[in-house]
Amino acid sequence: MKNLSGKAILLFAILITSFGANSLNAQVNVGFVDSEVIIKQLPEAQQVQKELEALQKLYLDTITAKENELKEKAEAFQTKYQQAQSDIQNGVITSQEQIDAIQNELEVMQNELRTLDEGLTVYRQKIQNDLIKKQGELFEPVKDKITRTIESVAKEMKINFVFDKADGTLLYGDKKFDITFKVLDKLK
Image 1 (spheres, rainbow, N blue to C red):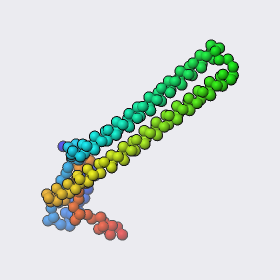
Image 2: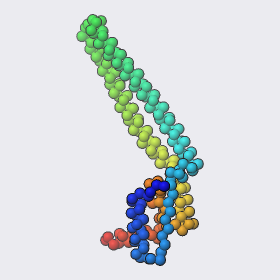
Image 3: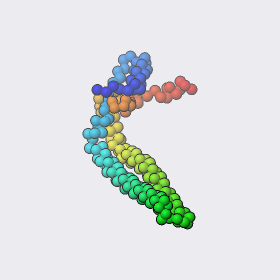
Image 4: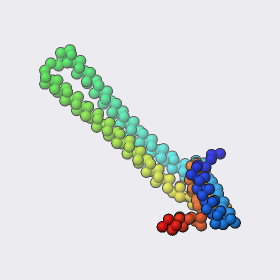
């Protein structure tokens, strides 16, 4: 069994101390869930995961195509460069005009490679951001359903606080134990 994180334990200790001092007769009930297990077994979450994987595959296929194009153009540049060097050394290209034309052609190819590489980098960043955004959008209804269910079960079982075993975050807290405004009043 995983231990709750230090933050969760500290929060729990503060809650117990705060409420224990005010009301020795009040009983605080704490529960936990393992969100990783819930996500793995919830059909809606599995469907969202499949959608994300399909989208990711589409993006990866596009990246692979762009990488292949970049590789082919880099190889063409390398071949052209080596051929130009060979032609100059062997006397096939002798005039300055021919050398200048080859240099211009190589510069155009090099600029195209740079542009493709920069475009690929930008595309990778964009799809990473898109995937994160899409994951948030797709998982929002699933998270809402899980949260509502956690609250419902906690109320049925008279549990005051529910933590996530996976990362120690507080998922549910009984509002009667919320001391936010008392703390703010005292700070003012």
